[in-house]
Image (cartoon, rainbow, N blue to C red; front, side, top):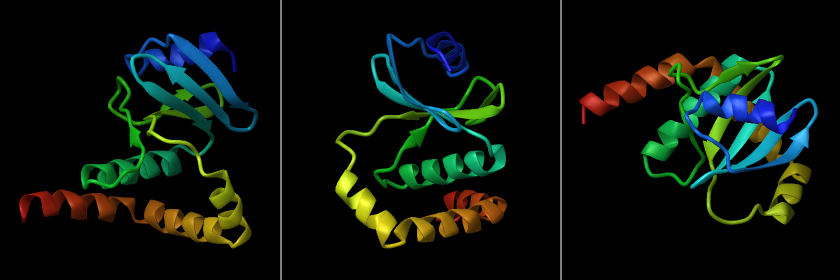
Length: 139
């Protein structure tokens, strides 16, 4: 993945990068994209799972949780297909990553719980989405 490809993908989100820093470039792609805001462009392989996670994160964000907010592409989805990967663009959050907690969480199996929860969410995404839409009208 090079800077020009990242620029091409970002065009699908109506942003023009001023600065690009590639943080990970392998099976998964991660790039920090600077404009007037800081974004993170992520490339993965499972479109259905990624789209579901983006929807869930945005639902949490809309309820006031401090979680990543995913941007919609020009086609109305959160993902953009490019080569063999599916890309998402998320608005950067303030602060720094907590590496110590991340390592400790992984050692204690917390990541397994999070992945299991995400798999349940992805299998029930339509129900979760419909339930949240209905709650908007029945409050």
